[in-house]
Image 1 (tube, rainbow, N blue to C red):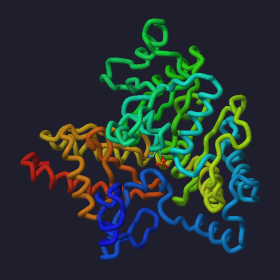
Image 2 (cartoon, rainbow, N blue to C red):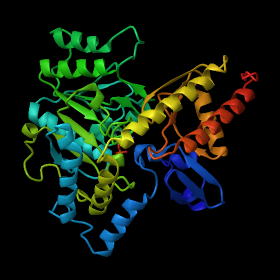
Image 3 (cartoon, helix red, strand yellow):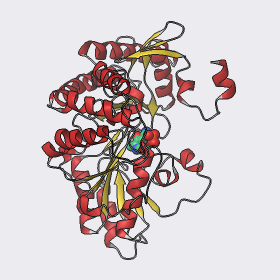
Image 4 (spheres, helix red, strand yellow):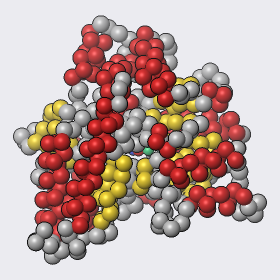
Amino acid sequence: MEIINRLESEVRGYVRSFPKVFTWAKGNRMKAEDGSEYLDFFSGAGALNYGHNDETMKAALIEYIQSDGVTHGLDMATAEKIRFLETFENVIMKPRGMEYKIQFPGPTGTNAVEAALKIARKVKKRPGVLFFTNGYHGMTLGALSVTGNASKRGGAGVAMPGTTPLPYCGYFGEDRDTADDLKALLENSSSGLEKPAAVIVETVQGEGGINVASFEWLKKIEQLCHEHDMLFIVDDIQAGVGRTGPFFSFEPAGIKPDIITVSKSLSGYGLPLAITMIRPDLDIWSPGEHNGTFRGFNHAFATAIAALETYWSDDQLEKETLRKSEIIKQRLNAMVDAQPSFEAEIRGRGFFIGMDCAQAELADEIAGECFENGLILETAGADDNVMKVMPPLISSDEDIAEGLDIIEKALATVLERHGLLNSAA
Ligand code: PMP
C-alpha cells in the first residue's frame, strides 16, 4: 500500500474508502492480503452484476486466449465480434422486438455517452442537450457537461456550453411532476430554452443517489421528445444489464429510446466493453468519424457472449432479482422503522437500492462500519448521503441476509455513537 500512497495520483478514490490490498475475488466474496474477508454489496459500481470471476465466463475467456483468438483488432471484423453481435441480437434484441445499430465506441461508459451525444447533435444539427439534476454520465468533457455534480464539473477547467439541467423526477417532492416543467419550457417561445437535439436520462440515478424515475414520468419525457423533435437517450450504463431486474432498466416503462448506452456489466466479467445502440435511421456516422484504438475488445466479447447465454436465455435471473429485491427493501425499511431518531428513506428497483440518510454524514459512517465488519458498499448522492445496496445479482438469500445483518449491526453501532440508538429495537 505504501507505493499506492506515494506514487498513485491524489485522484485515487475507492482505495480510500476500502483501504486494503485485495488479492482474491470470487462470486460476491473478496479477500485481502491481511487475510480479511469481505462480502461484496458494491459489485464494482455495477460492473460485476454476475459477481467476480464467474466460472463459465472464465472458461470461455481461457479457451479464447489459449486458441490464440485475436485480442486486439481495432474495429476490424473478428469471429468473436460476429458471435457477440449474433448473441446480442438473438438473446437481447429480437425477443424484445428491438431494432438498433450497434456502435462500439471506446470501451468505457463515458465513451458510449460521448458517441450518443455526438450522433444526436449530428442528426438534429442542433447543439443543445437537456440533462437532469443529479445525473451522472461520465468524466470526459461531453459526458461531464451532462453530469450534475459540481465538484466533478469543476474538474473540467473549461466552460461546457450547450447543455441545460432540468429537475429530475421527484426533485421538488412527490406533489410536483417535473415533466410538466419541461413541457412548459418547451411550449413557451419566451422560456429562453433553445430547441435541443436530445434529452439524456437515467431511469434510476446511480451516482446521483438512487433516485428512481416513475414509469409515467419517463413516458412523459419520451412523449415530449416526440412532440418537440428531440432524441430520447437513455443511459443504461449502471441501471442496465439486470441491475433493476430486466436486462434494460426501461423495459417495464414501455418506452423506446432512440439511443441507448450500455457498458459496465455488459462484458459480465469486469472487462471493459461499451456499446451505443442507435435507432437504425439515425446511424448517419461516416466511416471512422468517431473512432478509438480500443473498440471491440475481443476478450470482453468472449465473456459477454457467455454472460448473455448463461443469464439471459430465460427470465430466471430477472424474476429472482425482483423477488430478492423485495426482501432487501423490507428489511431495510424495518431497520429504519425501528429507529425513530434515524431518518432515512429506502428506495430503488431490483438490486439497485439506496438508504438515503437525512443526516448525510451518517451514510459514510455506516458504510465505513460495514467495511470494518466485512461488507463492501459505497455511498452516493449530492452529499454522499445515500448508502448504495448493490449486491451481485447472483447473491443467494443467505448471502443477502448476511449482508443485511452487517448493515443492521453497523447502523446500531453508528447510532449508538451519536446517542440516537433505540436499544429496544
Ligand atoms: N453513465 C452512468 C449512468 C454511470 O453510472 C457511469 C459510471 N458510474 C458512466 C456513465 C460512466 O462510465 P465509465 O466510468 O465507464 O466511464
